[in-house]
Amino acid sequence: MQLAFLAPLYERPGPWASVHLDTAWTDESTPSRREFQVTEACRELAVQGADEATSRAVYEALTAWPHDPGESGRAVFATGGEVVLDPPLAHRPPAASDVSWSALPRVAPLLDLAVQEPVCLVAYIDRTGADLELRSPLGSRAVGQAQGKRWPIHRTTISHWSAGRHQRSLERTWRSWDTWDPNADEIAAAIAANQEDCGADLVVLAGGLRERRAVHNRLPVALRPRVVETDHGGRAEGSPARLLDEDVERSRQDHLNRRTEEELDRFRAAPAATAEGIPALVDAAREHRIAELFIRPEGSDAHHEVWVGKEPEQLAVGRADLQYLGEPHPSSARADDALLRCAAVTGAEALRVPSRGHDDVPAGGLGALLHRPYDDRGRGVRS
Image (cartoon, rainbow, N blue to C red; front, side):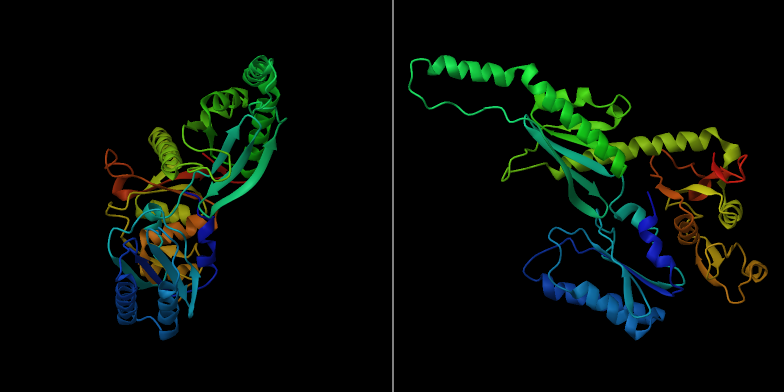
């Protein structure tokens, strides 16, 4: 998971109100139920020590109407009387509410809840061209169009004796690969160019089978392993289902599962370039050596107490250690949230490791792939 979207949370000192709510339910009593749910969350913030202005900002954000249709839940992060981040969620929080007032924002649950990579480039294809759409954790947007030559595809209405022969000729032309090839080449070139520009991890081709296959076969060989096809969707405006969200989500999840296994294999294969255990991870974080952080939330180390200062590298296993790092008034924090702060501000990524089948990796639930100290130009490099 790329963590750049968390950057606004680490530009302010805190303390932070972090609220995760399950808001997926909807019925005739939704407004009153939501009011009660939010009021209870804000009451819990006050009990934990949150100031009135910040609690009020959380309340106003969570009770504002209208809500996005079909939302899975809400995650709100606020400090100093202002909501700083309210990211979209892909999944419902496991509990009705999770509320905390702490030195650092409680972001670790977002590894399970937030919309994640891969970024998908969706191509809606027909024989005359394609519409291109980028789907990312921040939403969807049109990014381009490939428009080929428009060949006649409608049936003739002439009553001449040669109408049948004329129609058959048009249909032969329509079915001809000679007619379709230039358009397929142009669509494939547009997809490849857009994928390179936007850095999409996955390309989804939607449209008729023949059109999809023709474009797929013309994409660069290096790109084809990232390409999946779907039977659903259509290019025409008003199509009943341009693309089923379930197809995109399934493709994304398959990609994430493959990537998780690949990264865990790297972790197992390179013990000299990894860190496990709180002391080793704290040292690596202070030295900005974490390239990718692995978190298994059920592990015992994930909720282990560490000590933090105002800066991300002000991190220590024991309270007394921070006095040697220039922080006279350290605060306690969960290890997973503290390490995620370090990872986010140094450009590292994070990977949520599922417990099933991986109960021993990483040990204690926290680990990291590390940068080598320096390359021959004096810069840190990834192992």
